[in-house]
Image (cartoon, rainbow, N blue to C red):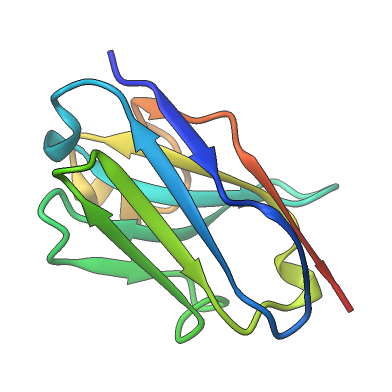
Length: 126
């Protein structure tokens, strides 16, 4: 069993930055590829970014490419999402999720993810 807890959300002005963290319990964190997803009001779940188990491979949604960076520290059981140049349309609840296979994460639907956090709210004001 893996528990995921996100933190780092908040209110920021457009153009600003935030760094989200997702802390995982247990000793098996490095066995999971990780992803960040978002859900905005009135919209479905959307893929944001993925990172492989080793951290050596990453993948991004077009909407965040060049602005967001996903990373992980397996020694700290934590995955991060550095968000720069934030836009009002980035406003959403951000979730981290874990899956044994990287291909599951980059599929982008969120289907097949083994574990989800409860989310952290990011609000970007104009």
